[in-house]
Length: 123
View (tube, rainbow, N blue to C red):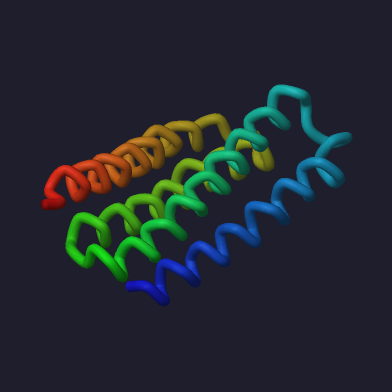
């Protein structure tokens, strides 16, 4: 899983920076302040959880197990669902996409819970 999680972290890190720059330079004149703030929230959560995913990749080498693996899966899924739904919401204006965002948030929470349980079980 090390390679997969590192590649996902690299991809999400790259796209997070690119999307942040796109919002700052390409969307500033096209989106309302409210939608820009929503887009920025997506970028922030993507980049924070990219770092978490990177940490999970490194942790998986020292603490292999299902909980660490599930943490990485949940972080990646959370990025796609949470941040992705915010990007689509702001770019398309389809408000119903907002229903997906909390599912991504639950994925993030589940990832952190998995990490916490894995830490609790350390001897």
